[in-house]
Amino acid sequence: MSFGFFGIQIGFALQNADVSRIFQTLGGSVDTLPALWIAGPITGLLVQPIIGHFSDRTWTPLGRRRPYFLAGALLSSLALVLMPNTGALWVAAGLLWMLDASINIAMEPFRAFVGDMVEPERRTAAYALQTAFIGGGAVAASLAPLFITRVLGVSNVAAPGRIPASVRDAFYAGALALCCAVLWTVFTTREPRPEQLAAAIKPAAETSPQPEPAGSGHGWGWLAAGAGLAALVAGLRLGGPIYVLSGALAAFGLGQIVSRRRARAGRAPDVFSHILGDLAAMPAEMKRLAVAQFFSWSALFIMWIFATPSVAQDQFGSIDPSSRAYNDGADWVGMLFAVYNGVAAIYAFALPWLTDRIGRRSTHMINLCAGAIGFSAFLFVRDPLWLLAPMIGIGMAWSSILTLPYAILCDVIAPAKRGVYMGLFNIFIVAPQLIVATVMGAVSRTFFPHAPVFALMVAAACLLAAAVACLRIGDGVSSRLRAAG
Image (cartoon, rainbow, N blue to C red; front, side, top):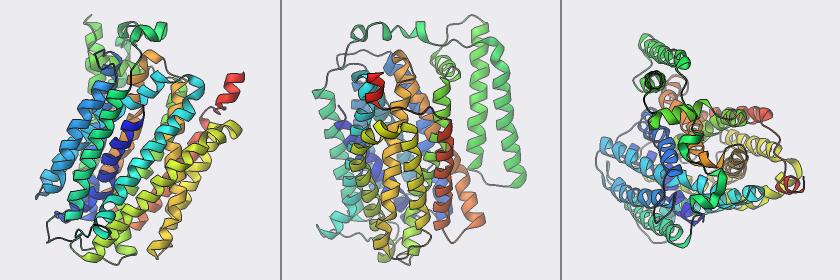
């Protein structure tokens, strides 16, 4: 059931570990990396709620969720093959859009798929097992360039402006692995039919919150906020990428206005009206979880962007993407990413045991603090080998982030809305990424233009903020205690 996520994570981890390297090889500077990475947040923001909405309403010979697994896997594999063969920065940025959209199409229904198939008292264990597959896939992908270089003897250095052969081969292998793993899940699992989910799965029209015309004032507020931010950016000359954030706010407000006016006119709600209505009707616990997710994923996105330039500069002494030292540093980042993902995969098996004893909330807070300590260590460690130790704390946080919020969320949303709410929950994963992508370039350029390691200190602060936000989340008791009670 979760094996397809092994393949999806291979593609995702290759993207995280090597796309900054590709961008810099093709001429991107450190302070432009966040803007180039903006594809991920925007595609996730748009694609995941839509895919969730339609997967709740889909039934085909392959079931509800599996058609999306299959389509996303095929498109992701194609993007992985094309990405390392481009010779232009703008083409690579466009392929990142394609790759991110395709991975989101495949990935979003997997969260709802587990919720559909597993009884409530076993969901922490089920999502923990999914995290183990995620960690295993990420380890394989993160080590691939290093393995191809050190074991197979393929060069990790190329002429300026050319992608190293080791990176190309890693992406080809990743494309094959992603496609095969997802096909395994598609053809070896069977989903319960809608009628088998009994009364919990009602026709979508019966359960969708309908937009209320009186709420249109909120739309005008969001529209004004977007326009105000754009004016502020222009006045302070903060740079073009931040306009994306203001545009997102304005578009959200405009969508609310249009949705409310359609409702006043008596017109049937379209897909966007349904999604906006579901967003407005989020359970309170989901809103509290969203705050912790926001800060958690801000930290992760900062790490994925800035780890390579930071390690290459501070531990390997190079800022030249065509140099051997830089590429050795980039390969070592792959090793570091493999370690934190490996820790996450193993640690996932301990999470059900911990939550049985101290609750989901306390477990999550401890793990987030461990991750913050790991990020902070980058400021003090100069020996690349010793960077392996901080990755243990980061792996604990990553395992928890991938498991516990989803186990809690499944308990507070209606089964008929599982797909769309899992998609909407991902807004609070991609929105912080959008903010990081639009503002971290300006922050880096202004405060630490020659020291990308300080971006990782910002990541540490974000994880601490997420831990504090967990205080407002209900203290998730163990599956055993819930079953007994």
